[in-house]
Length: 87
Image (cartoon, rainbow, N blue to C red; front, side, top):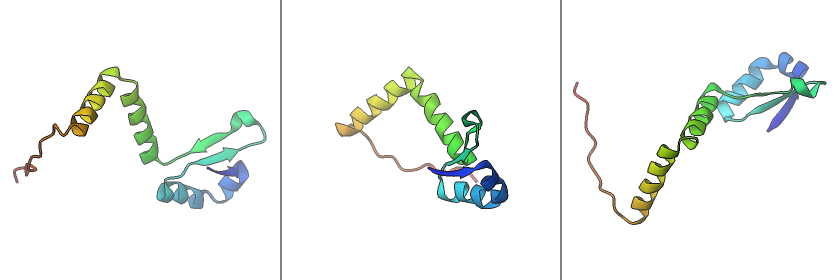
């Protein structure tokens, strides 16, 4: 994770926001007071992270995922053609 000072971020805000969005990286924004340190990430990555946390905190979903992985490992899957939506 790259780190930049608050003043450095302010001076190059456009560059850093493009970097975070284009490279899917996070940026640590530092300040003299450690309590004011922040992390900047793209909305896409934030949404992905929160969805993952939601899934991982749901025991029912985790159980379904584990059962599916077991079925795949045992070759108990079926392939279906994609259904084309009506025009």
